Image 1 (cartoon, rainbow, N blue to C red):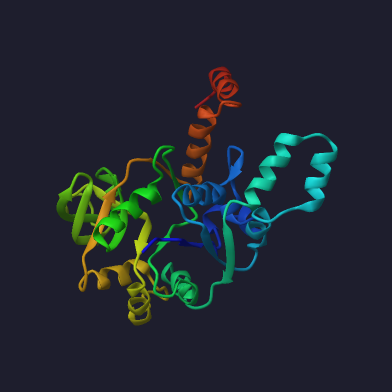
Image 2 (cartoon, helix red, strand yellow):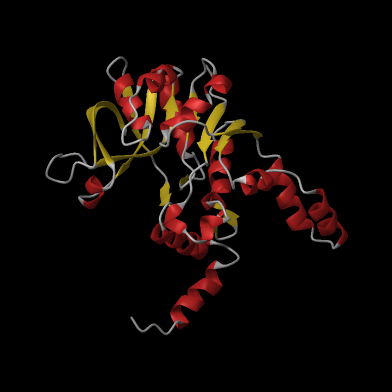
Length: 289
């Protein structure tokens, strides 16, 4: 069955970026010249996903506005001859079919997935988080996951190489290698630390899920007042195979201030328009560190 739908939760408060996220959704923070959420949508579209379901909350109107047409702005751009900018803003609204629903239920990243059940039905679907993105121009990360799903018809998780420090930050995957860069998962432990596992393969955001995940989420206990998708996936793994795809792509974790600055710096240096001037600026900085 072809995968056509993706769920993107955007209801979080963005507390790590306060006070700026008091009024501005963290998903709308800019990375060079685009908001974070646009990078995510562009990856989904490039992966062949036409229907994108945003699970939103209060103060997230800016996300909806960004992916909508803006007749007044477009008329002004056309009148002033800003043809390049006009084409860009019109393209954004036409990238995909967008649906917006409000998050209802307990905190946790399992709730927005469960909220989309009535829109997904019995289809397999993609879930990606809005505080990280991957870039691979030739084959997007989501496309890589979808291809593994099409081959094995089971849940597929994004995996990336990590180091000892990463074992303290991420869930670590252990499993049996079934082909190059693909594992059938035998164990996944949340932040085990370097001494508790030999694996250095981390599970980060990005999943292809089957509709069976909804029943598991319904039965998953709320832990520390939050409903966790990882708990439901672990429960599902007792009934059917789970797979991990070690993706080939540049990973940008923009869920922290340092990660956001790093993404802006790296992608800014790669920008055809800004890269040269940014390099000069960095070289000319007089830093007293």
